[in-house]
Length: 334
Image 1 (cartoon, rainbow, N blue to C red):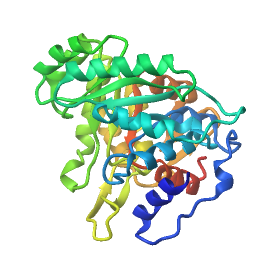
Image 2 (cartoon, one colour; image 1 turned 45 degrees about the horizontal axis):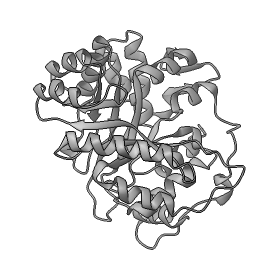
Image 3 (spheres, helix red, strand yellow; image 1 turned 90 degrees about the vertical axis):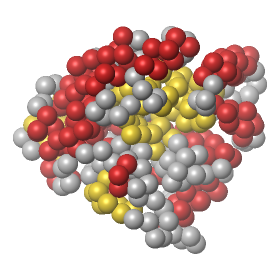
């Protein structure tokens, strides 16, 4: 069961390194140290994308990891499992091979977000068939595709592709941060946006100004968004871009920076100040209290953060779940 997580940690810390996991931390229990403002920010925040670079785990390891995360004391931070539509059958096989649940384990359906291939019509048919079969076979763990993440090459595709995706399936369209015309099309079709916030090379990381511009455009158009890539760490800082020993390094956006920026922008913060927040590299500049989060004299209430997370800044995809958790633990946030 732990093989996938150990593999993930070895990738992160170098081949042959010992996985620094405290098995007691994987006993399902509510956190006693997390403030209510931090919990509002972190709830269901991390969509697990272990199949994707730079982790690139196999399906069995990724599924086993996600199962363990769902049974851990940090299960309230776990979001959806991300999988390509083309690998749904492989996913189901790995899911079916997990050990049987105990009587006391939660049997809620696994929540999936999928990435389509080149034929969206065929992929939607496959998604609907997968969901229908999962609901029928109650003897097995249930998994439901809740959202689809579509990368587009131009804004005109949004109207056409939105007609193919059923209304009850959330659709996130990955667009460039400065592609202004796409926001109106996403809003008109009742869909959502997606921003790529990093990658395996420095050029994949958008500037703070462009990220804030994207967030403001989403707020103006009243559309929700998610982020993906380059957000393994809570606060903006320098890290290796991959888990390879000779990996290049550079400044990476922090997920606490990003989601607090979204909340402040929603409350009317101007672009210049929001960019400063996104570029903040000092953890001491943030204070998480019971009902308030403070950043350099500016404040958000727990309710404002919760509203942001529920209908505006929904989640981010990460190929590692333990790397963000390790950092949150070191900062005494969870």
